[in-house]
Each structure stands twice: as structure tokens, then as C-alpha cells.
Image (cartoon, rainbow, N blue to C red; front, side):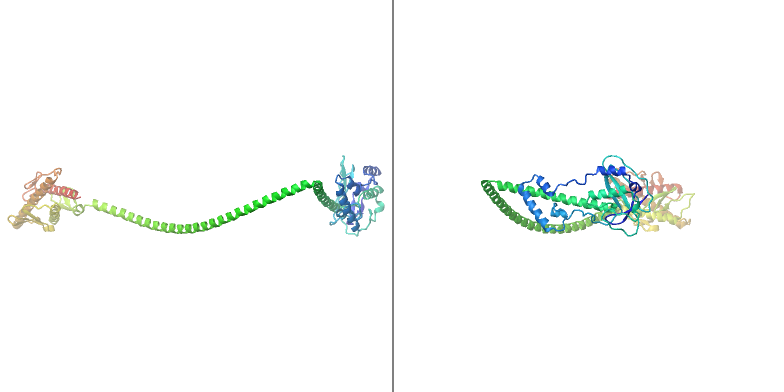
Length: 492
């Protein structure tokens, strides 16, 4: 069976737990017997003050302050408390500051613990905790918007006639033994506990102040009891310490002034050093720029030098005579600048090509003689391409170094002159070879020249074999090539 009550602080309806509503008389007797007697006399403020181990003058000072505070406070309900503590005691029937809350706790000893659900929730089975110590009965506030009733003691709702008498007596018993009317909801109980905690902190701070005040009074008393001679000695000692402290302070001030002066000098020196550093970095940067420019120029000159050295080396290795007079062979034919020199029965070579090749051979011999600064005796070379000739100085005759394939009588005489020109060319070649051998004994020419023969082959064409004439011409070109090689190497 549920019984509705109201919180004695916020006046909100509460729903009583069935286990508390059905409290038996034996349970009530057990709870009431565990509570202290109602007529237990609390120690008065005067008795507490008398029991403190403080000097009597301190107690008298406190009594005077307490009397003045008691006479000036008309609203205090407990004259035995201090003026500071008077305004912090909970008022009976009014509770403490704080918003109305939802549940209340009743502190009992060796009783049943029951959590009472709020209105609208399903009541749970009461949980009971056995053991020694304090036990809490929790009362939840009903979820109701109906108007509340005002009462100084536990007030029943319209259904209060159904409430068991032991429960009513229990709340009355609790209200008579505390300064708070019961029952209270949980929120009001929490507010009460917070207020009591704040009071405990204030009282602790007040106690600490009293202890500090007591210590100061003890020191003052000790100073009052100190002999005059000791006080004078202590004053003199303090004056001496003051004088020494003043001297130290003045010395420190002089030291500070000296350090300030040194600091100003160091600041000026630092400023000068900063200016010098700035000038140094400017000069350093300019030097770096100049060095970079010079390095770039040096690298450019080095690159140009390397290129020019490579070109020079290439030019030094280049033989213009080898490029101008390229001597080789084409099968059985010796060639000079790609022109074949000679004729065979199996291969047809035009006389124009043969004449041009003889013109190149004569020009080569003429060039070698000039480069060696050698003058050929009894002959003068006249290079004129395909119509080159050799002049004999002694009788001022001229021999054409070119031939023709015509078979008439005039051409036969011309071919005879062509043979004389080839023999004269062979004589000029012999003179140059002998000059080279005189300059360098290591120079070697494989085919000796004797009159009209080079090696063992005659150079004459008339009434001769074309294959032998072609072989003789190859020997001539080989001798010219060896001469050219020696000449260019000796000049280098």
C-alpha cells in the first residue's frame, strides 16, 4: 500500500515506499532504540571555550567579541554560537538554499535500505542490507502537479488516514532529534549536504584563523615577558643588522651603477660591432659577386682554351698534303686522287684519266721539292694538269708528260717524247730520294731507280708491255707516297 507525503522543504508530493509505509512496530522500536536520547545536553559555547588549552587573556578577548556579536544580532536563534557561525546554521523547518529536488534520504542505524521509485515507475523489490553502521531510507518524489500542503511537521496527504502510525511516529522522532523537518526529497537532501559541507569548510577556516591568532598571541606574550635588557639588545642587534643591510644595499647600488655603466659601454661596443659586421657582410657579398664573375670568366677561358687546344691538336694531326694528294690503288692500278695511272689489256683506262694522274704526280713531286727547299738539277718541272711537261735546262728542250692513243706517224713521235718525259720524271724523283737519304739514313725506299727503270721494270711505254708499264707506275706512286710521308713528318 502506497502513502503520499510532501517534502517539508520544497512541498512537492512524495511517494512512500511500501516497505516503509508498512513499517512494523518492532522495526520502529529497533530504530528508535538505536537513536540517541532526545534530552542529550549539548555542550555550550562557554563550556567549549573553557575547555580549550589557550591562555586566559585570549579567552577573555574571545568572550568580549562574542558578547558584542550577541548583543548586535537580534535574528540569531542560538546565542551560544559565534557571530560568524550564527548566520550559517540551518533553520528548523525551512531547510537550506538550493532548488527543490526529487528524492530524500533518512539516516538510520541498523535498519532497512529501500529505494523508492518515482511516480509512474514500476516499484522494485526492496533491497535490504544487513550489517553495522548507518542505513539510508530513500524517499522519491511523486510526479504530480497537484497543489502541496504546508506543515511544520510531517503532513499527510488526503489519504493520510491510511498511513501506518509507526511511520508517522518515525518521521516525528527524526524531526525532534534534528534541526530539519522530515521527510525530505533527494534534491533537498543533497542541497542540505552541500550546505553542511560549506559550513564545515567555513568553520575549518575559522578554526585555522583562531589557531594562527593564538600563535600570534603566544609570541606577543613571550615578547611582553622578555626582559628590557634583552629587548634593547635585540633592538641594537636589529639596528646593526639594518645598518649592515643598508651598507650592503648601497654597495649593491654602487655595483649596479658600475654594471649599468659597463652595460652602456658594451651596448655602444655592440652597436659598433654590428655596424662593422654589416659593412663586413656587404664587402663579403661584393667579394662573392666579384669572385663569381671571375670564376665564370675563368671557366669561359678554360672552355675556350680546351676547345682551341682540341682544334690545334686536330690541325697538328691534319696533313694537308695527304688530303691534297691521296695515293692508293684500284686493283692493279695505282691511283692518285682517285685517278688511275696505267693500262692493262683487261681494263680500259682513258688517256685523259692517265694524263690527269700524271699531272697530279708531277705537281706532288714539285711540291715536295719546294717543301724540302731542294732544286732539281738539269730539269724544271712545269705542272699544268693534264698537259704538264718537263723542261731540260741544258738544251732547253721540253717533254710533254701526257700521251695519246692515236697511231699515225706524228702521234708515234709524240709518244716517244712522252717516254722521254717519263724517264726525266724518274730522274727527278731519283734526285729527291737521294737528297732525303742524305738527310736521313734511316729512310728506306723499296724500289731503286736506275736510268729508265724503277725496281726491275722500265717506265717506257713505246714497244713495251702495258702490264709492266702499269707496274712501274705503281712503283713511282709508292716512292712519291714515301717521300710525302717523310717530308710531312720532318716538317712537324
